[in-house]
Length: 130
Image (tube, rainbow, N blue to C red; front, top):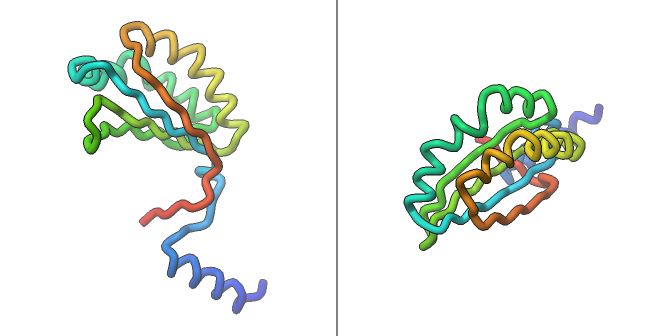
């Protein structure tokens, strides 16, 4: 290994606060969900995890390649929105997880709600972790 070249690359990464992409998080999906009312959003927040994203479902998704799932309530807009970010090992993990989600999550998730949803999928090109 060329240590001098490696140190230059590492210094660049540190200067730009970017860590290298790893197998941990290569592919992601960012979902936005807009609810019609504040009450509907609050009900979703209070009940959705225990009814839909059960420990059993999460274990199955983890085995299929889901690395991380983050849910956040949007506060800087005049709407009733949450964002959900899914991080996967790779595109194949994403596809495997989508099969599980379509069979085990979506039927329950849509029982009581009809939010407007938007998905953005991508390959991670920069990932800073402090």
